[in-house]
Image (cartoon, rainbow, N blue to C red):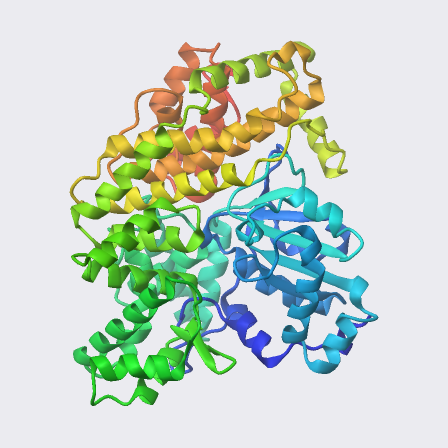
Length: 630
């Protein structure tokens, strides 16, 4: 079915063009997503491979059934789906976008009808008749945040089975991988090459003069490397762009000493501040938006014009509500949807709700709301508000709620001990070496070839329950909230709690892989299953170690051991000496050696190092410890 027969609706085109944050194009207003988007690399989860470009997802030659894309909220999953929608339409597909937080979906059988309804809004009237009629077999389902669907009981395996005949292509996104689902990818942080491409696009918004562009790009690259080198935030596009917007024009390090909260606060408030004519006007904007966001915590983000106008008049009777609402829309803080208005991005909604809570924390009603919020952090909106509240408020009541959450999740009796799991992985590595002595590298290469041919090793474990997924999201949200409180130096937040919480979060992630073991003993496990388990564990550890390395910048101390050795490599100034010495002196510690190699490879991809450190990291990543290669 030729793509020229289908056209997106004007409202959906506006959604696809929205980058989520306001990026200036000096003299020409705000930039659109296509002008600044760079396709991220994807890491095949648990497949022992490197990275692949996400642009391949729209290429028929690379399509192999349903695909799961995972990453934190700020990793760029929604921007990826928006860009793929345009590319898929050009390729002759009919993409349909669903958001699990809003779509009326409680089981796989609800998805086709939800997609038909969505298509009616996302295409012109004539085109939607084609998409839902003769072109239905060419539909591509882009299901964002599927793990946050109303029931919380959807899983990629069930969706893939039930939708096999309904859609030509299915792409799902979620916060965390599902190890039992083989076709799973994690969004990788931007390495130096992709950051350079993003910087190039940002520079082109400012100048077309080659000499000026080269000079600005060099300045921008140095500033971005300097800020990311402090290891405070991950190298995702939203943070790179905020560094560019806040630091490069002024020639100073801008947000270099800050945190997640600082970056997002800058991104949210900058357009409003620049659109106001006086401090009082800016204060009015904050007051109206924070009260509006707080009122939405009870459910439903949309508000009609009379409600917003009433808020404006209550705070500033002399102000013109129409002018204020126009300012909100122009700054991309609110967007108009069918006669009503809603926050244009999740992080703007979360920030302003947290701002209201922080300014009114003395109220009993607000405190009750904060208690409720921290008791249900498995909900994405609650997690986002908690993150900003931990940054904005130094009130001990907030850190008290974080502490209660830490005690709750760290006390789970079902968590498997690190010692037991480490012992199993050591035995796993030893078992693979016994299968093919001294040729583990060749075993990995052979397995990756079979993976490329989609010859997966199917594991026998079950799918994680919805309650387990919610607990995983809760520990992740608590970890980010506690990190914000630590970075801000708020009283009552301790580094010891952060490390305990990180280990609980790690155990939650790894327990799902534990459940895939067919038996407790490695000797009873087939070689293909051993390899699949090993790669799954390695992928989960790689992502968790990166999170731990970011925690250290907030003052978190890590007890000596495998995790501290690996995390010390994931920075611009890595400590290679301890890792090398440990590996040389403890050749029997196969598990620790694997963590060190993983961390060294990722550090080389993310950071700019001095030549000596780069050489040492390259050797570690290749398994060169002393005179031996492992």
